[in-house]
Image (cartoon, rainbow, N blue to C red; front, side):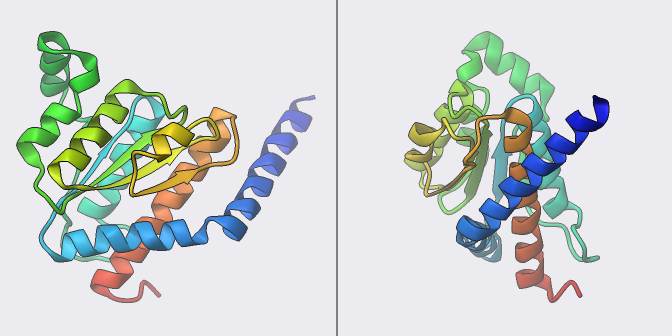
Length: 193
């Protein structure tokens, strides 16, 4: 029985990745170009999300601020999820909906990029951050799941993973994020081979 559960999960993931390779390769290329152009112009790449998506947001920011494959200078990538004092103060003094958007007000400039991650497409603080980013002149990239069509409308680019199962969506998000980081790093610092 346990083996059946594991096999089924692997098979579902493999099928989803094959579909993404067939239908969503251009999203990764376009998203990487947005981030690359931003960083070439001394802009900043911001990320945000909640729960597992917060972990993914932090993960992707650190792949660029540290390194992915290449030993190269750090890039201006900031996860808006990591400053617990800001998160708790803004959540307490204003609302949890504003924990990312208020940070953007103080940190972001036109031409920067915000990557917002929400598996459901309904995370109020991520939605609010995307709206604030657009109003401030940032480019926006979204990662969401099958129910995130309305969220996708807020984004310049959005990967709507064609699946409603949170673990499968999250696997697709981190894979797409890794590919974005790889393409950005290669474009800015040379072939990773």
